[in-house]
Length: 250
Image (cartoon, rainbow, N blue to C red; front, side):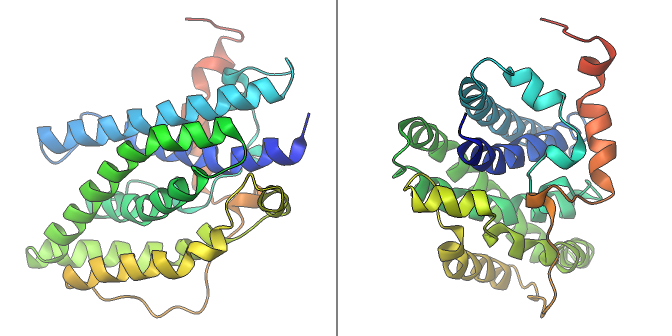
């Protein structure tokens, strides 16, 4: 098994799994019915993409694991997602900013991943682009609506921007497995997406009358398996059924 490719794919797919799990926690708790359904559908999109990646990873494992094993039976340190996507649903402002920060990156990533020499990854990217384009429109519109809305909505979403901004730089961090995938023509050099990413994000924040934080210190570690205090609680919910009833099949 090519461990480098295996870990590279997990670096992408764990993001969609964990963010999808976070959004699924909101089912039935949205600010209104339409938005509640929209967030649930985005969660389903992300989990659908995750399945495609995990099925490929299971294939690469040559029978050593299944997609369920990969999703539910790894320890916290074995997940490669960025810290941003595991942050909690503090309030709707945090949900939207977390989604927006990831959506902009996700769309840029998939556009480049379409050109991967790995035909399976290229196909997954091409299939997911339409969904992720909608995700970015949805989150961008809500950023503008809340930022340029009432005083309360503005203050809440500005607080979310200030708190979550420190996680954005990790989006462009390359692990050794990422570098190997880039050299082989399979992976995307995400460091080259940084300029376009911040340009898009800052344009939307400015239109939303939100202040862009001036930070020189950013947090990272998730891509190396070093997670925040929130990850363990998230996994205890995500993995409960599979660990309580081992080898359960639907």
